[in-house]
Length: 617
Image (cartoon, rainbow, N blue to C red; front, side):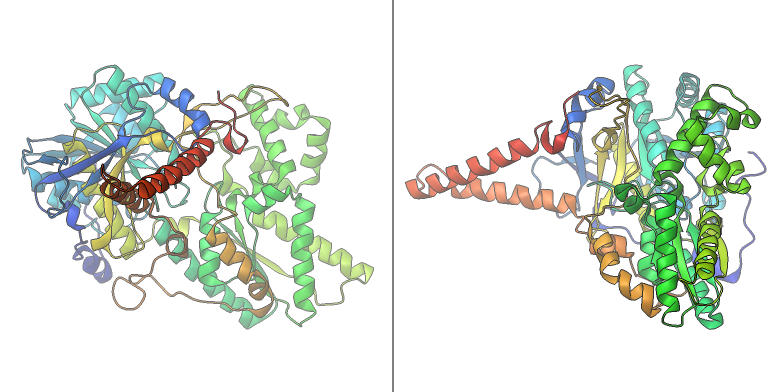
């Protein structure tokens, strides 16, 4: 065993208390019998992508959904699994560290040992590099003792966030065969689970018997679809950040002379920033999705902030708090185009020192306009997923400087007669992602670990562990598994008007829905947040007592119980069958035919590849 991993932690009294908490299991995961109901074959959310995805994943596309059932469920065609031979399973942390990840390991360990004490769980040390090198540690009660309900990924560690190249895939397959693994569980976000889908397909094609299972663990909250309501770690990072933001809000209100620009970790989407705004009530929130939709320039955003500062000054308020998602830099059209040009030159092998001399004239003008610190940060090499190093680009500092300059100009011109503008900048990212996990993330991760075993026991390959109805208590959670391919889309890139879109199937990050209830709630309260200083402090994470079971607004306000609605639809269809039987009156039969014909016509139109403007590939 590598001495850097699995070393017992030195725990505080609070942490020791945490390790004693035993997460609850939903009824469908209790006992030693696995009951699974399979649905119809699946497709993908975007019909125009179906042909491309089915060709790329011939062995794993179209697999059915799986629902795990409680003992009292009366499903005649359910598969009942009572025999549990010894199983060898490997687990690897692929994504960025996210609070709750250790409980996935704990839940999986408890599940495989419950069903057969001779089963073995191997943790790959050092993330994917440990997977490629076959560096493992057997998970035991002793190893887990000081990691239960604790933050971080340090039990096993993580390195590169990908299993993508031919060499990496082959090394993974070799490791699974050498170690005789029945299952490989991949813990991570959109990139890791996209890689898991490709791995499952390759394993099936090469007749490798190892089954691949994905787990949605990412603090960014951008792995969302009708099957995945939440990601492990999002609840924690939003609650921890919200308390930090609230502390800053109170400081601003106390001093009455500073504007705080706070950038929040969250990658391309603004989920973390939106949730933190709802929990802490800052004065302004700049959403990347709004900026992209309205094509706001850097100057537009600067003007928006300056106008807000001036409006508050008119009420004798010279303080405030402004939240900025780290992905904002890629939502500003001219900066995104500049980044694309820089990355293109980097791909050509042009050195960092020479890139500025190879930029196009417009890009050169913009690059020279930007402060030196931003220029240096934009030139950083992209990350493993080919995206900019967003955590290293100080967008908050850039905006603060531009706002300060504009307010100074307005003061000189006499259009602003208030006090001097003062800004303080913060980046909240690493402070939160290593936090002790919230009670919700402890429960959710532990349950997902158990589901991973159920998926493997059912012999499924290329699936993600899923839980729906999460806004309700644990005993009402619905547990299942969805094929990774059903979550895929083809991200289209057209190089010119009328060109054929090109792209590769993947699970792509989901942006904040500007038609969703979270955004609607933000817009309803934006004016009062801006002017009335309605700062709210949710307090520190609670494991018991008031606030312990609080869920995020993101989870609570959206109507997300997709599988519940699928079940409800099935109940309606079954009811129609029981009502419309031979011998029913002509009027009832006629009404049923007219209604069903109307419904099927509407659904046929909605599921056509050209619906919503998409063209088939």
